[in-house]
Length: 396
Image: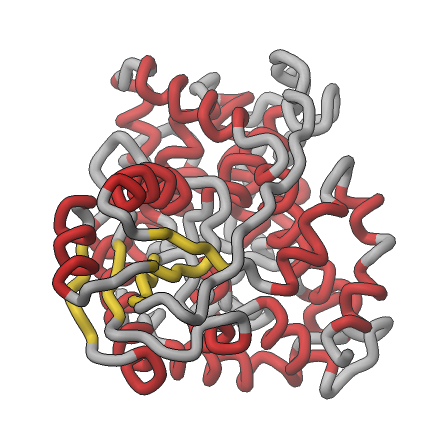
């Protein structure tokens, strides 16, 4: 797994440099082709690095737009911004994530679900994608859509179980992008609009590698469900106090902590890591996802030691984090802001315990997120209208 996606910032930057020349015309015309046998040559495969922010959206956009105009690289820029949009949309509607997790807890794992996960169905294309996912931790975006559609509408399986299968095996498994994309395929995200996989489309974009004729349900109706919860405002954050003794806590949602020094973190007595990978699912995570996440966290902590002091442990238990902070006589713990998901839940619980011990927990939001997320109020096409302004802010 690490051979395909080395879990370091350096590897992410190298992959970005390799992809930038292909991010305009080649990406726009060939991005839909699912060609694992050729190494997926027409897409960036940056998602494992972006998901953990070993590299950031702004770095990717700046690199691409340093070579091409926005109009030339529009399709790729939009793809990067989809990730931002999904995060902002879920941030204002966290009940969607909570409902999904509650549904998973109540779900019985049937023989049909287990057979689908093992790639033991009558649809060869689906089976190949299941095996590729389990073996590599990655799937092309188009293959993800086909897979989800077949899972829901042809195999008739619960979308939540499919989303969980992805979350447990994808190196880029993200609460917002993964959950909301599965809901979109099902017809729950955009009411009445679902995605039906068709054999002609699969055949075209796999260059004939797959053609599941007559095996797909192309007449299925979209799933139905409750209306979206009302939006809630993105919460205001307190600023770090430069007069308090500080330690830095990194987590697996944001592993490029350099920006903290630009937002109130001038001195730190040490840095530790919070690994929340196991919280992504109530079921066991794939070993390669856990290994990638921990190694990426170690890479970030090693880099952070040059600005934030000596490296401490990677911790999952709240009491050990509190003991570590107390051992450094910390008065505040500063951490990158965590969007809706297991890291945010862990920090919310940690805040209560730290406060009880007289220690403040301060989250620092990235300027990109602060500028972009409030615009994720409706569908992506409304969000798309503000992308030029967001891009312009990168150079200000």
